[in-house]
Image (cartoon, rainbow, N blue to C red):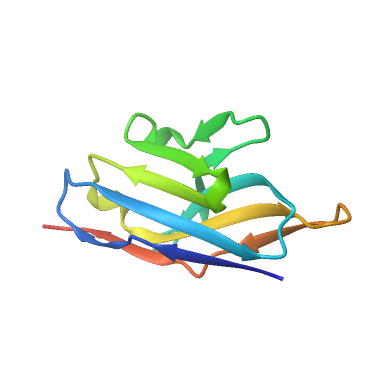
Length: 120
């Protein structure tokens, strides 16, 4: 089994910054992909940023130029640096990892979610 633990959420004023972290632990051979999603009240969960196989990155149009996803493979940790935050960025943020176990089996795992609130 694999556990994902998130941290870094909180309350920030518009224009401010936060950095989210998500660390995986457990039975991990390798991490294939890492994503950040968010879900605002009354809305569907949406993909915010992703690091794909090979290291390429992908961002939702609404966060391009403001958010940066990065990964520390040695620590099994993915980060989301969020700058120039807007009230519409308010949501619960979730990390997701595609983990390869010994033997080649792959599974998706989700973090518990961390609240980000952007308000003055």
